[in-house]
Image 1 (cartoon, helix red, strand yellow):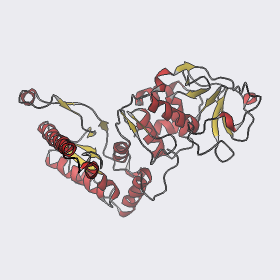
Image 2: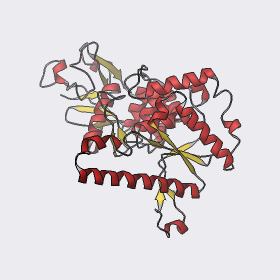
Image 3: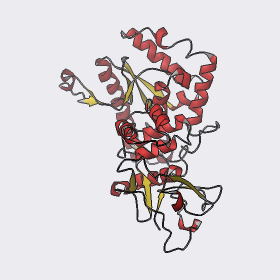
Image 4: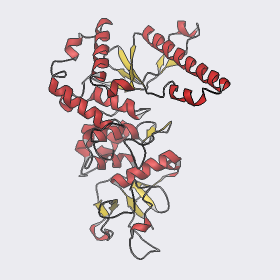
Length: 365
């Protein structure tokens, strides 16, 4: 069998091969003609539904998304959703993942998914593709996130690819989504925070201007000579303001592990030592960045889930920025951004993107 998966099917498979390290073996190829051999016809049993993010074998409710080079080559089965690419794509638009499956390159996949995903979900996907994490193929919103991976593309890479496409559906919304996508995101939750900070007020964001994620900040030599680290990497820094943000989740200091090891004194002592070292390093990081004129505001998970929590952190950052010589906070925290209606909409968007909330998500992002 050989077939090109696309859209949600390709996204699930891409997430799987990123997590397993198999993506590094992908090879550029053309768009193949679908071939079911040695089977004579297409059946759901041919497809490993777990790899495609499906709860069971494909059917009319659980579609397999595929791409073909012409109308005549559309595979005949009720569970297929087919895209036809007869022209308009540059060389390198498809990657062979295995003997059986080809997928669109990450840049084309980003364009494709603007056609079926909510814009905010597409922007989060951009952070994932351009960052070092991958969501769970079967449960993207609430499943386990894998960290420490190589990015599969970049914002400039996607933008350049779009410029080479001709009459491909989805390029215009993809360019719009890229305005709020940033390279080098290290986690899914910090991506959600960055997304809201970058989005305009009209799209349920804070409209804080340009930002960078996980960019290394060099420590002054006078501090390095006194034992400070040579550089630090805050999660988010704002281009035009002397403030930034770090997200610290509930497992940041591994406190939840204490009850499980409390009866083992030696393990407990080592664990508490590790926690203390991490805490001390965090405080020293904040001091070293403050010495460079960059105040880093910590964001904890409770800020995201409690009403007005993230709003308070952003307002605190704007007030701190003003006192450090930045623009008046009243200019940035406009009355429009903090109107009850916009606060409500922004809160709804935030909850729809976070795991573990009752708010309806924005689809299978």
